[in-house]
Length: 348
Image (tube, rainbow, N blue to C red; front, side):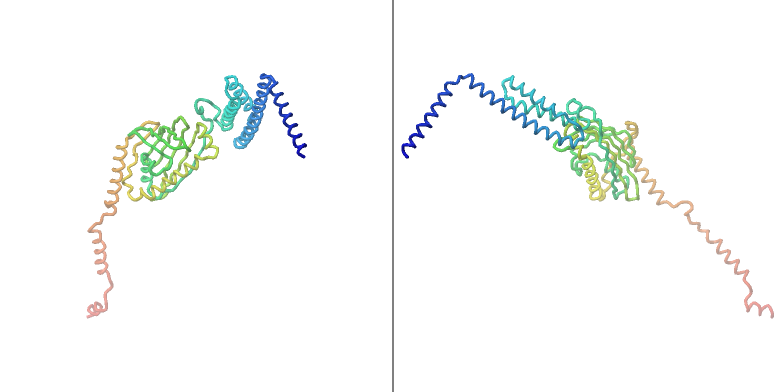
């Protein structure tokens, strides 16, 4: 047994020496070539895995967008970027990843309508999201209108509105709101505005804008219906992604509920504190200032109160109106038939 063990050890040691001698006898260029081949094989394998992953992600995006995508462009970009990185002495695998991600981003733009145009987040939007809804508020129509046009108070009760300001007697309102994790601003130009009736506006913004109208309808002396119609034009990746799931519509409905809650819980307690904007706008021009509209509203209220308190001519009471009926009663007594006593006196 000891002899056999020694024989095995000597055989293994001789084999190791042979391998070591063979390695040392290989030229350095051959070793470099073999290492390069192994590296290239690893890169090819990584690119294949990356292509498969990108293809799966693209197919899922296609299912959402209902569009056709060219997966070959992803592989082409990946290979091209890998070659650029290798030529510059960088990592080909890292370049392949960058190229694939760039192609995937372009695919996402093509998959979402109106996103393929360039220019820093998108050109002119080709599609808009329509929103039409209404709420009933238990206050008079002028109170609902005044609260709606008090734009500076919007951030107090609307969750995603960060700023809303209107310059005095100007048909423009600056709005800033939160969209997902981003903050967007747009300027709304009021086209038509009639107190207690209608507001129509058009807006502009770098990352999408909202056009729309709101009308106020008196259902009863203390019940107002507010009808809101919006057209949302998204621009940019975040806006168009949210547009797929109609996130803007849900947000608009929530903000309308916040408005109703604020009116019914706060404004209704002291409606005279909310002044609103009582001016008038036609064709983007202010035809009546807020002060003039406010003065006219107060005059109309005073006139209505006076008409209610003062009696009309038909309601005036004539002191001599009852004398005619009294005279008729006296005449009727003279025309009565004689009583029995009168008959007896006449016979005597």
